[in-house]
Image 1 (tube, rainbow, N blue to C red):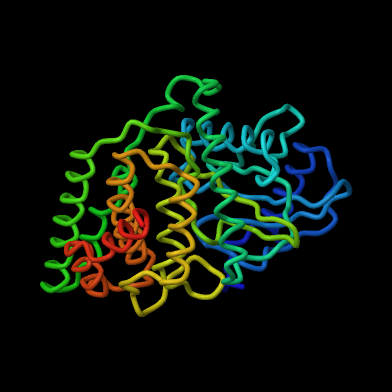
Image 2: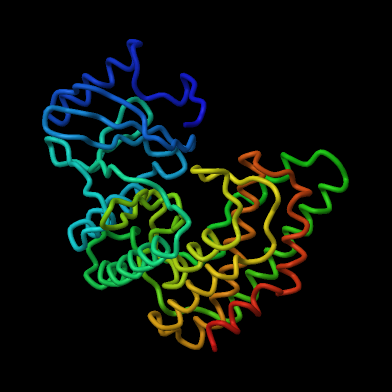
Length: 342
């Protein structure tokens, strides 16, 4: 488990932890018997497992970047819709007053079912389970929009390049002229990808999970579950599939957490990429625009994830130069297009 300090902790022996426990008991109507942390902890938000007199629950703090009212509505409405439609999404536990979340100070918290499972083990069997879950979520995402459950603003459409909101933040990490040039290359590359995306266009949107990485899946003996709907928003139908493809084939993860380690991979894992792309070819029935757009979205997701890795201090700015060169030469796109069209 990651090294945790007081800033990261949700539960413990101090007064603020006991106050939180009392609030939880009053808001949900149960008695907390024991608290513990999940075996794998991401420090982007606080998490804990609660053992209560009526069962085990997963407690999560909403990150500040997605705690505005529209983000909360998108996240909770879509997760609730999914969990009521299919059995691969944990149910949100509503408060006694039927709310999805509760505030403590300036932060928001919520409870969901606790899935006692494991993370991805590297097997093709796990890959196939995750692919089938994403396909189900994609279909549900279409139904969510068709039924217009969400109020005005929640169904606002986003294009895939609009997820890359923090690229300007890289300027803060520049230490020398070489890194300044790499950042300039990143900006130029992202602009080219965005313009190419716009020139192709997209007319097929769904409510998307928008964080389909390997570590947002939990496996039990019989099935896979998709968790963490914090980033849910209306995106192109192919977006979640692109995120998963990038996550599973070209990112170099550090053990069982979502941080990255060196080296920066520059090509796809051949076996896994073939498995995933063959699944897409058989199951998705890409439109002409989607066929052209998918590799562009993969490059956008890959570049954006690498930028985040610098902000998270996994990589240095100069570590990204090789990936920028590969994107600009369109090396990996040919692999995607050849496999999808074979």
